[in-house]
Image (cartoon, rainbow, N blue to C red; front, side):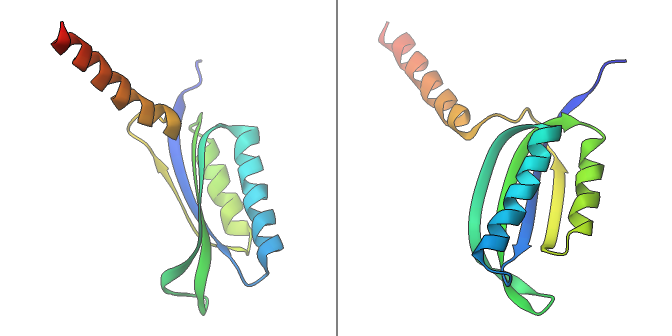
Amino acid sequence: MEKVINSYETLFIVDVTGGEEATKATITKFTNIIAKNAEIVDVADWGKRRLAYPINDMPEGYYTVVTFKADALFPAELDRLYNIDESIMRSIIVKLDYEAVAKAEAEEAPVAAAETAAEEVAE
C-alpha cells in the first residue's frame, strides 16, 4: 500500500520563563523531531510575543510555525509529544488543503507569471 504524504502546518508556543537558552533548546528539539519524521518546507520564528490572554499566569510566549510534509500518522504523534513537554504552552497542527511550498518559491511564482504575461502582451 502506498504512503499518503500530506502537507501540514504546526504552531507551538514555548514558555519563556526558563530563559532564552531553554526556549531555543525546546524549539530545536521539536524542529529536529519534525525533520526526522517529515520533510520540513519552512520554519518561521515569530519570536517572543504578548499572549491574548495569560496562559498559566504567563503573559508572553515564543511563537514558532513549521510547515512540513508527512504521512498521516505523524501529526498525532507530534501532538502527543507536544502534550508531554511542559515547556509547550499551546500547540496546533493543521492539515493544509494545498501543496506546501517554500516561501521563496511561492514569492517567485507570481513574479515569473507576471513576466510571462508581460512578454505575451509585448508580442
